[in-house]
Image (tube, rainbow, N blue to C red; front, side, top):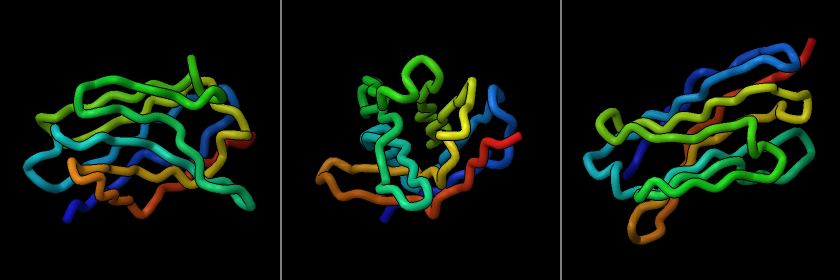
Length: 116
């Protein structure tokens, strides 16, 4: 069982920045593929950024060039740096982990609100 705890969300003005963190339990974090997803009110959950166990990254088109995902395996943590935030980025952001068996785990989610 993997537990994921997100932190770093909040309220930010358009054009601002936030950094999300996701701390994972377990001793084999380095083998997990990790991802950030988000769900806005009335919309389906969508993938924002993913990083594989090997460090390869992929981003949703809407955030490419503004968001950066990276991982620190020594700290069992994955990060999402968000820059030039827009109102459309407002959502609950979820951390996701997939283990070698492709079993998925989810964090509880954290609110990010972009508003003036």
